[in-house]
Structure formats: C-alpha cells, structure tokens
Length: 266
Image (cartoon, rainbow, N blue to C red):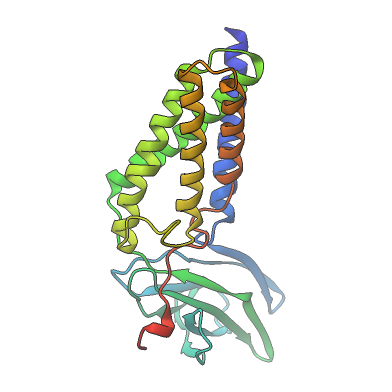
C-alpha cells in the first residue's frame, strides 16, 4: 500500500510539472517582461490567444501619464509593412486594438513606449497572436481532464512496470483516456476552434495532433502486448510512458493551424 502511494505521488508530481511546463512554454501563453521608463520598472503582459468574436485589445498598465505609446502590427508570417496604431490612455493603462482575424489568422505585434526622449520596444521580438473561434466550455473542460488523467495514468503505469507491479488495468485505462481526450474530444475542439478535425499527419504538421498520434500508437501497441500476455509487454508500457512524457512536454499548439496569407487577400 505504501509503495502504491509513493508511485501515485511521483506520477502526480511528474504530470503536474509536465502540464505546467507545456502551458508556460506554449505559443499561446502570454508574453511577459518588463521595461524601464522614467526610472520606473513596469511589468508588461501581452496576450496571444484571442477569439474571432472581437478585436484583440492590447493593454499595458503604466500609470505614469507622461508615457505614450504606439502599437505596431502586421500579418504573420508575411513581409507586409507594419501598421501603426496610437495607444490611447485609459486610466492607468495604454490601450490599442488589433483587428480581429478569421480562425487561425495570426498577427505579430509590439508596443513602442515613449517618455520624452526615452523609448522602449516590447517585446524585443514581436509577439505572435492567433485568433480562434470560441470553444464549448464543457468540451474544453472534458478534454483537459481526460488528457491530464491520461498523463497521470500513463506515468503511473510506467512506474508500475519498472517496479514489477501489475500494469494491465493501468495500461487499458491510459489507452481509454487517450482515445477519449485525444482522439475524440481533441478533434472536436480543433473543429470548433479552427474548422478542421485533424491538422496532423498526413494533412499537416500540427505537433499537438501529431504528439497525440504518437502516444496513441505507443499505448495501442503496449495494450496489445500486455493483453496478449507477451513478455515484451512490460517494457512496451515503460516505453509508451516515456514517449508520452516526452511528446507531451512539447509546448501545446506548436506548429498549429495558421492561415497561408500568400493565398489570402488583405
């Protein structure tokens, strides 16, 4: 009983660390940083995950009324000339607007902040923001819970295989959760957000879809070997768990859906 508790604790910690890392390093996570103007340091945050239902408001909190700013943006990826918008003061913040785009439309943008002769460009490399259609809240919650549980059971199964504990039930539960969260709910979310059920191999290079496919193949093979009573089953579970940890450490939405602006009029 004590060994099982230790294994569950290790699995939970590894799953949480992996999920947080994936979220914090993903291309839709806000860009954070700071600038110094007038001897003051200001923490800034720029969003990168707007919805197609409205323009994206760009807001930087800088109470100093002497600070002014410009918003520079263009379609991504293109060589278009940058559009410039004056940031308007709204209380303690400066605000501008990025025009809403169709689903999977990306823009890159920066803010130029000025106080007298001082200027600060943030971020140093433009932030890339991608518009998406609204996703059903129940579908989103179910997907997140299923994928988190799949990661948890995957890691727990791998640890069980390493220490010689039973793996059959854990293996089958992992595969079931991956199918539900990744093969069913994942494509539903993708369709709602970007209009396509699948943008991985062979139709594209979306790493979110492709890493789900890798995990499904690995666990499908492991489940077959375990259920068939093959000697290689235990090591297949270890391999599947390791592969799942590795592929799901890849930031979410990397190489995701995006509009080819060369084929789309301005």
